[in-house]
Image 1 (tube, rainbow, N blue to C red):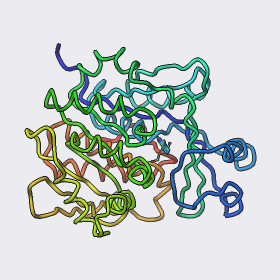
Image 2 (image 1 turned 120 degrees about the vertical axis):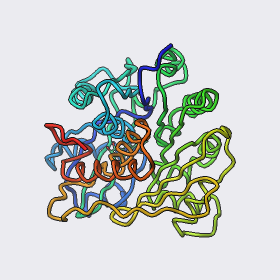
Image 3 (image 1 turned 180 degrees about the horizontal axis):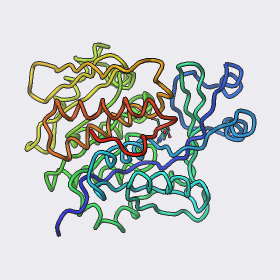
Image 4 (image 1 turned 90 degrees about the horizontal axis):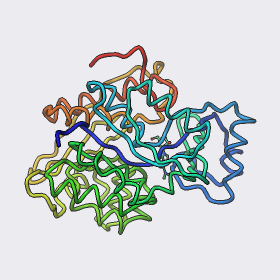
Length: 340
Ligand code: 26A
């Protein structure tokens, strides 16, 4: 069967409810200024409070869905497909609308009982606290992937957000193993510090299948701590990730660590030198919102991988797209479309 999609992405389709907050709001819900967590019972009032008292914006989110929109932004029409589970509600319609605008194909499973997942994004100054109530996104099961296996077969590469390890390790592993079997690239993001910390075992189960692993400096550091690497040196951690045992010997693993405005660090399996790429500078005055900048980087980078570009160009595409996303509200990209 001929491949139809360059990239298939799996994770949680979420609606971002994003607003400016203050210390009192963070304290009320026990949130850290800069974090990403799963919501507990005590957080459930946050979403309405953001909408009613803080003039929140409703934006398409979900980290890997943001990456999928980003990759599609740089690729020919119908190159990327995103899968995940939503509810039958108006929130899902907002997600569909944003994806349609970006030309991103989706294959959502609609849950009958649960609403679409929400991520409360509380901005205080340069910080951003994200609190996610997965709801329908948590109902994605391996059966749903199996029912749509034709899409998996029709895709040339797979990208799974590490956040999905809280939802379906089975679905993640099914893609990982299929990639190794068919010699297709399998990409995993570390997503947030709590993934290497509290989902260490499922993460380690996926590790032999990583052809690409991507994260930021706080996620890399969290990985180092939970795996007792006894270092916070980012190049050393990247090198460790790149050289973990690997299932598919036909591809060298590439580990990518972004560091905000500091250079992006890349380690390639078996290579002693770690590569360093300065970011595209952007005037502070032009930054509208940093939410989703890392997701945008991944989108640009993996669009480059899909096009078969060399590593330097993939990084440049990632940084170019991240710089565009920084100028938009939320994890969005500018329209009319700019070309790389
Ligand atoms: C399971 N969790 C906690 C999550 C997320 C998430 N996406 C999927 N699963 N928590 C936050 N996000 C998304 O991260 C983006 C910024 O990088 C938010 O929806 C936001 O768009």
